[in-house]
Image 1 (cartoon, rainbow, N blue to C red):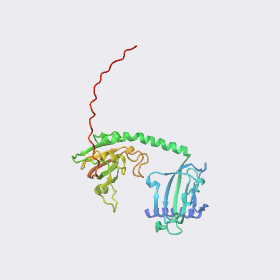
Image 2: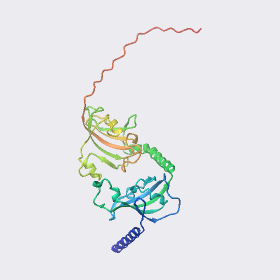
Image 3: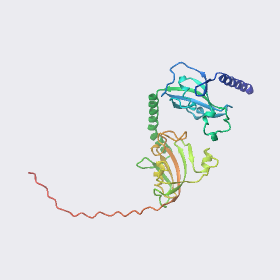
Image 4: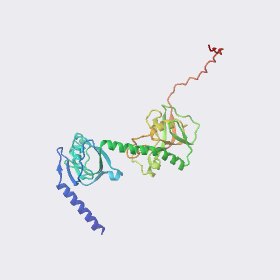
Length: 323
């Protein structure tokens, strides 16, 4: 029975693909396209912001990427076309709800840098984009919507951070910048100073517990992040020099060499509104378990002892009489 059902699915998929290939139209720049559904309504204009789902495949139907798999659509601002690869010729033909296939010649994509061309995109092949237009907005409306969403996320950040601290029964100190920290393993060894090179073992995760990076192989393996070829060892950098996020630069200068601590770092001291790729969302408070393994100090200028000001001689004062 399963085999029969799969045969029907494959037959339908082949029929749709075959029909799509027969109905292909060509743009002036050489892209091929065909519409699966075409709705009535206002056509997309320059400066509109479109929200769309995209599945990208090779000519042999191998999946390259999918916004469905990522869990969210993408947004694109429509502008005058620059070349065939930007697909800006296609969008003004569409409206909300339209779905289509766009085929971009691989020869155009890799023109001028053939060395980067993978073998599964031979000469004459195409990038195949299956797209669905989810929403069309004016630029002002899109900006307003995005700002409103970011404000909600920003407002919730402090609440979520406090919930994390409370639920994990953490007693933390807070610095003037908003960094929260607790030292689990104390040390009497010297603290680093700005400009010193530090070696740090760490595990970083979101407030929901999702690990996004670590220097420890066992932790990476457990979290499904183990990368072949990566050497898992303490990270080395110059502290206080801006090579890492602000929360690290500040927090590590508070620790003695050999200490272990937990940092709860607000987004203002981390990746802020931008986030970090698909791993760290906008306005994310980050949690780091850190161990200051070693410090390689540099020569620091001696700090001159503070001289006490000389005592001032007392002088008599007289009050002026009112005339």
